[in-house]
Structures are given as structure tokens and as C-alpha cells.
Length: 195
Image (cartoon, rainbow, N blue to C red; front, side, top):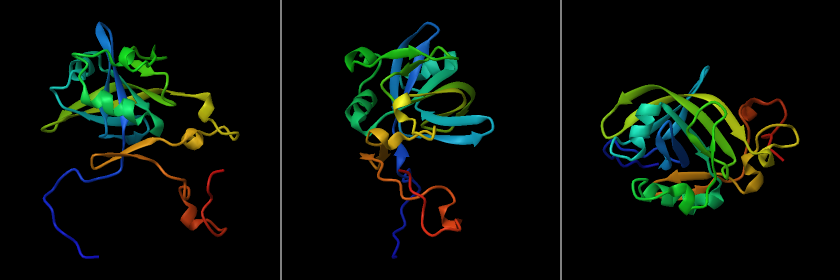
């Protein structure tokens, strides 16, 4: 392949498009759409989110040191987009999009009941990077909709049409499963695809 060389930029894609819940402890419940989120450690389980200091949710993140990461379905793309375009300063995002806010099992920040997967997080560190600050959060609890548990007992987010991803300004429905971790070295031929 012939390559073009571009300046360093945020070209990594796809990335998850998630709704981050903030609030509690005197702050209004709010949602911020984040596409720069990712798991950074397995023991303890930790996640990072990158947030601009001028965003409405920033003060709640810094002062409460709690947030939720709510993984939406692809069918919820319009809600996720809207929550990223309007500000919580001017809108009650839960009420206007008919979303159900629920307190976490361990933290006070709100989770979105309509999302199939919710991670309850406590901020462990804030790193100033430039345009964004990086919030490192320990995942202290996970809530999963029973509708997304396969007969085997494992999480299966494909059961209701797939989850949302974001790439270069566009939303995508993650496609079909084409293999599992380690399928390339399995003794039997071919990938083991979920049924």
C-alpha cells in the first residue's frame, strides 16, 4: 500500500461512543458524550475518559470524583449524538430524552437504565494533557441488563442489534463477531464465532 504522511492527529478509530453520567453530591444529573474512553488496566479494573475543562460535566467530575460509563446500543445513536451536541447548562438531558437516571450501587453519579451496560467509576487521577484532561477511574461496579446475558452466562451485547462505535465524525453499528481472542492459535480450524 502506498502511504500518505499526515501530521500527528486523532485518527485512531473506531472508538466507543459512550454516555458518561455525572452528578450527585449536590450536582445536577447530566450526561456527556465521550468517544475518547478506554480500558487501561485489568487489576484493578480501570478506564480512562478525556474531557475538555470547559465542558459542563467537568466540575462535577473533579469535585465528586465519580462517574458512570453507559454503553449505548447502536439504535440509541441519535440520543448519544444529541447529548454530545447540547450542554447540560441549558438542558436536562435525562428528561428531554426520556432516559431513566438511577443511582449506582456504589457511587452517586447517575447511570442510564436504558443502556445495556453501565460501569460505576471512582476517579483515581486527573492528568492535564492540553485540550483535554484525562480522568483515570477505577471501575468499582458493573451493571448489566439481563437481556444481554447469553445462555452460557456471559455478556453478549450483540443480542439486541449491536453497540455504537464512532470513527472520524460518523457513528457505526459494530458488525458481526468474526472470532474470539486466541482463535488464530486454536487447534481446531477456523475462528469460534458466538452463536
